[in-house]
Each structure stands twice: as structure tokens, then as C-alpha cells.
Image (cartoon, rainbow, N blue to C red; front, side):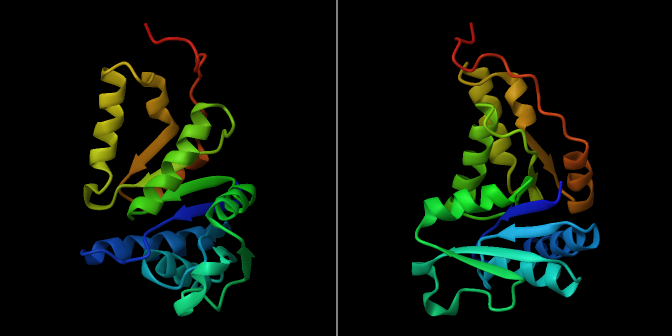
Length: 192
């Protein structure tokens, strides 16, 4: 693992702990010698994780679509900032750079990015660890929804291991370092 892609909200959220954990994660990524890949914004949890990694001496790579540059959202102090045409290109380039993924709290964009990489892991396209920083139980409803998909027969129980949940950045990173992808049965066979 060399580069960790972080998905995060463009807002800081209602609890100071969301911001604190984003800062801890950025510091941790840099202190362990990993590079941070993220969406390139200077605002919200995205900006906080990037600022913390940069302040700790880390390398930070941003990827942002041209149309999001308005309003001075782009972070001007990054090691690298890649401009792309649209959101699909953004996610493709971020995934090309990334060896692992971590989702901080966020909204629809964060959820979409998280589920895309988890889905691609299920299909065997990725074998990269996918971490979920479950700050204040933020992602607990998603963990419960995944279990509901298993119980309802729409997902194999082994696929629960595709997402690594933890409340603390340090222990989440430890899980990711020791990650072994779960054995995947044929996705296309029925569960019964």
C-alpha cells in the first residue's frame, strides 16, 4: 500500500468529532509514509484531511472536475492537482492512483464512491482494502443495511468482509494493512 484514497464530505458535519477524526486520519496517513489521494477540495472534511496530511509533511494528490473549480473550492496547496472533465473521470483517476480506500462521513457523493469501490471489489475488479471510518456510529445504518441485504438473500455473507469498519483511524489502518480479500463465490450464481 502506497497511496490511500479518502472519500469525505464537502461539509464538516454537526459534530466536532467528524473534523477531529478527519484531521487525525490525514496526520496518520502522512506519518506512516502513505500518500493521500482525494477529491481536491479545500472545504469540508475533504479539506481538513488534506490540510492535516500536508501539515504533517505528506504528499497529497487531488483530482477535481473543471466545473467544480468555481467558487475557489480547489485546494491551492496540494502536491499535485489533476483537472479532469467530469465525475466519472475523477473517480477513475482516483482509483488508478489508489491502493486502498477510506470513507469518512459524508453525503450522497461519499456514499456513491464507497459503494462503487465495494461493488467492484465484490466483482473481483479490485482487491484493494476498503475502510469505513465509523465516527460516532455514522456508518452504523449502512452496516445494518448490508446485513439486511444478506438476510434477505441479495448478498453473500462473505461480502460483508469487503468493508472494514472501525471508529479509530489507527486501528482502521491496521485492519487495512493486514487485509486479505474474502473468498468470493461466483457472483452470478444464485444464493440458494
